[in-house]
Amino acid sequence: MLYVTDAQVRDVLQWDDLIAAMEDALAALSCGHVVQPLRSWLTVAPEKFWGVMPAAAKDAMGIKLVSFYPQNAAEGLPTVLATVVLFDRATGEPLAAMDARTLTAMRTAAVSAAATKLLSAPDSKVLALLGSGAQAQSHLEALSRVRKFEEIRVWSRTRAHAQRFAEQFGAIAMDAESAVRGADVVVAATPAQSPILKGAWLKRGAHVNSIGAPMPAWRELDDEAMANPVVVEARDAALHESGDIILSHTQIHAELGELIAGTKTLDAARTTIFKSVGVAIEDVAAARLVFDAVSRAARGSGAG
Image (cartoon, rainbow, N blue to C red; front, side, top):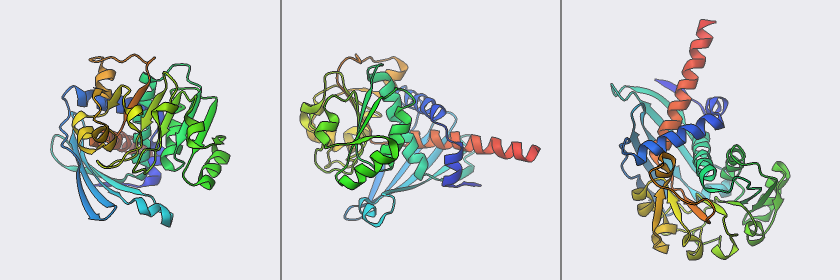
């Protein structure tokens, strides 16, 4: 069985290919072509969580094992650590195990990019990032593949972190309200347990990608923000895991895969919310992309 390191994942995973793979995977999910149970979480200790995420599609089958330890940030460690094991769908044979730190960050941002491509104004120029960690960086990279931003704004609970991000990526560090007001696209990528983004701050027609607050009692967005049309990856997962949806009692307008497949529509001129919880088929499809790329490279090296 092949083992793929995080460095190998970074070397072979390309944004455009990954965004397209996420679009295909989510369309297949919404069309009923994916077998995927709800994620199972084990609470190891207060604010220490370990999850199991299996999924099977037509050409890929696998399982993601993921730990979510928010307090790791204080120790300078990743808050999300994960491994994906990929299997042959036809035989059940294990094909590869791979470090999924970069894979997780990239597939999450690629899904947001797919949503942004569909739901944001084509001439979007201003991007606001709430959060300044790994997901802020990956979202800046991914969303820049689908929109041409002229101004990047960033906020973090820790001002020094926002300033460091701003200096590294040519952004402007701001308070949260100033960053959001007038922004065309907003990314909320924080470990918040109570709302850090208010709907009153959003301009008409803005698009929000919310990927934080991954527990049923946690929130990033207030009720006013959640009163806008909401799109999710999978209804069952969002209703089971997303505190933003559960606590606001919002009605889900559509799954992203339904919009991609054309079975549902949503006017991009409206203010829209994409609430992501992360689903297993995203990881399995991304892992398959990595496995195929690594295998091709190995064959090419052997042929030489």
